[in-house]
Image: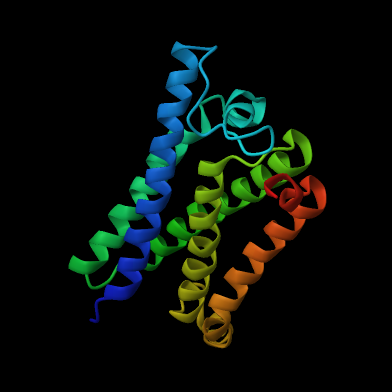
Length: 192
């Protein structure tokens, strides 16, 4: 059985980036709860800030502050990545459940992107880092699972075709978010 060192490294790094952002947002959330009038270190302007996002209903969509969910979710991603260095093979059901979890995170982040840009009208710096980690996490895990036959032999061919395009797909997703933010919030005008 082959070990997937680089895939494990990708998961560990991606999880660490998301975990770092979630930790920073958690600290900011606790700061806001203990000192409601205090300015947060991630509040740079009316457009680029954490406060509006953390204090909104969207900031605790499941009744728990979103950064706390990120702490758990990204820690699990780091654990899976590190475990891949030691364990040559996880069961098919494990990869299916992991992919469902990553897909849920992706769907939640896409919703949060829309809420941030179109409803709240802000870009939270640490949220951007979470988005930066979650988008490729979903694309790479899903296409890797397709290519490895986790979803069946027919899906293996689809994964093999998509795999060389994964970087381009990720960059295109980043570009879509940037264009949406620019059109809705006129980000470039606010930094010039």
